[in-house]
Image (cartoon, rainbow over all chains, first blue to last red; front, side, top):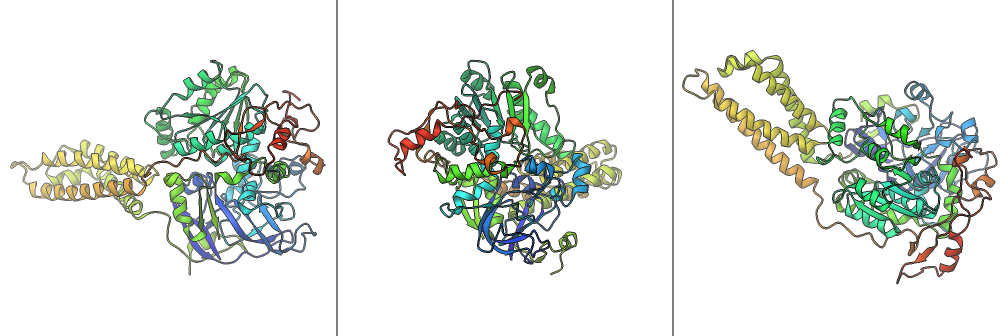
Length: 391
Length: 230
């Protein structure tokens, strides 16, 4: 089969690889009908996530049709079923899964030894997201083996197209969880840093959850126009001071709820000296992430406010003003998305037409065009916001 | 096809049979070559400055050569990183410094001025390559044309928002009786509605499904009020 394979920093190729096979009774194999490139795939593309190895298949936003099931599936899946694959692999049986904390499932990371050492305790296995999270082959491929398939799937209603359903795998529940974690009150201003795909979903989620106003911050006009389309007030950080404008929009108090949908790769600019410091530290391997957005959020967030972090951070960060955060009494909520906690509700909202996540798709291409789509998406050329690949 | 990458695959995972073209564009591959060259030259300058100054007829300049070595290594690291364009630009600047330093060794009092001239010619050639690489990188990664206007992509089906809304519903909790998430993250159950806002039709926007009223009523449904310490 064809698959997008990581060969090193910025080196992804559409390779011919052997087909996946059932390895466990709870496995299923799907024929991938649609998959997408996620913003967090760019962190792998840039080799910022530890424990990637040449030969790893990329992709954690995938859906398709079941073509083979293991003997232990117990009727929850059958050949021909159309399913979306959550990016977090879940057993559905461990204590964390029973609590709904699916992204920290205790049983699905097959490199638990590694994760225990690095994180202290293991988190769930993820598709195509380094050996720290199991080293599972990802879904940017023609076929995908789904481990724990009886639990790791979302059945897609026939009424939904691939484009409407695909983002249940990650970015829609991720944006939703980011907003839910904010515990939004009707009087709240929610500020969202980063208008990439997750930021766009977080903006719409905050709107649906009843925020008084939602403010979107980015530097790319096309992304700001998409945020504005939903009704967000926009701040172009290349044109105006984020902090001054946020204070102006909130009567000098700062936004009550702040969402960091940027994560580890803040844009580096001469006008933001801390980003240059971070980039230098990254190159000297003295820091993993560029946490400019976190610093800005801690500074501008209203005291007793909430900081929600759906953006991916990979390791150690430097110069975080924890003193300000502590004295302001900020609440931090973060984590990989507990996808299945939200997908029943979100599937219904899509079916009822409350939200149509396909709005975010700007480019569709074949799998063999995947490598150049990574390059295009990274450079944000051609106003690219979201790429869907059709194997 | 033999691939070293296949040695690290777990049993049963797909293995590479044949490899396709890389996502790395040609100018980036070329720039990477320049980056490695920079590091090689920088290490030579750092570790063997005396041999270089002797060959160039520039005795006593070992400290300067070592500094240039450090500069080359830094430029190489930058060129090998994702900030490749900055790295190559820094190489062009460094080439200028090299040219100035070598030009001082071309005087008639230097018995090795021929060597210095040869080094100068080499640096000039490399400078040309750096300039070509810099231009090619800028061209390859440029954002051309006007950014698109996605102002028609609300994702809320032709509606614009005027504040308010509703929170997660009890659906998930009721369907998944075993879930006991932390209370602040748990889907709301039967708490009072707090959503006062509505999803209004945008002026002139078509309600594609003709369910505008229904959408309004839906938006005032369940709230998501969770007090701190719930």
